[in-house]
Length: 181
Ligand SMILES: C[S@@+](CC[C@H](N)C(=O)[O-])C[C@H]1O[C@@H](n2cnc3c(N)ncnc32)[C@H](O)[C@@H]1O
Picture 1 (cartoon, rainbow, N blue to C red):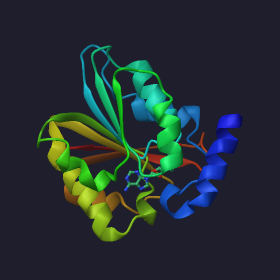
Picture 2 (picture 1 turned 120 degrees about the horizontal axis):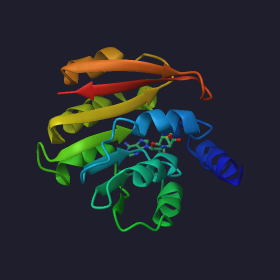
Picture 3 (picture 1 turned 135 degrees about the vertical axis):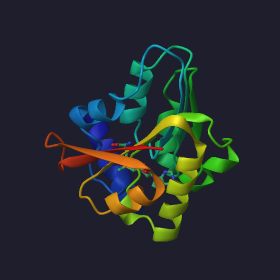
């Protein structure tokens, strides 16, 4: 409950970049992390971690030798994320559009994004998707949720294959995209 108030207060201060008034439900978070294999170390990038609800689920699921890096631009959320004690986690207080400054092409296994795509200016959004596609390894995946299907066609421009699933168990209900190649 306290987590939800914290999220709401932080979101209301900067709604345009947060794009939600509540953090993702347990059901949505479970769907976002379900594709992550557990039997080998992974390099994972998280975009827009906010209060860390997805971050903690990623850390709770993946192999002990994995590497998780979270890109977050809201300083209040950055501070909250830095409170997560896990040696596998690095928090970067920079925008997702700077991915290529940190990763070589083809070097990341999964990019998991909670970015409010529909509220991000088109040029920045396109740059984030372009860089995400480039940093992903051959069999990597880009995973994203959205409350409506506004950006499905844009995702298809950057990724060879996009599958879409849905959960009612979130406020609001959400679509989950898994993008390959
Ligand atoms: C809808 S919240 C998601 C929070 C949490 N992951 C969840 O699912 O409940 C979106 C987050 O994306 C962050 N964000 C927005 N634009 C960003 C950007 N260009 N780079 C990194 N983070 C960004 C916001 O600050 C916010 O924390």
